[in-house]
Image (cartoon, rainbow, N blue to C red; front, top):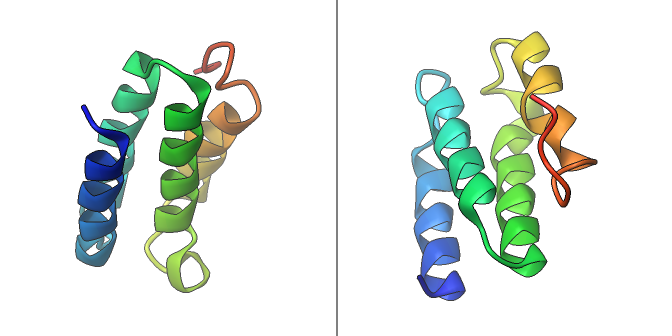
Length: 84
């Protein structure tokens, strides 16, 4: 799939993020990261995950333990393999 198309779709999802759907959106993006070929694509997805989670001073994060364990835990080791 074309990277610019995926990033545009993700940008559209940023607008739709709420406390109710944030974890599901991030989960779907992380699945795409697991399947991604090429570090540029993974880096773009990780940037979007961080952007989504940090919106408005993390207002949509209801469980910081989840945030620290899932997306944050993957950021440093994502190029090799997520340590979930």
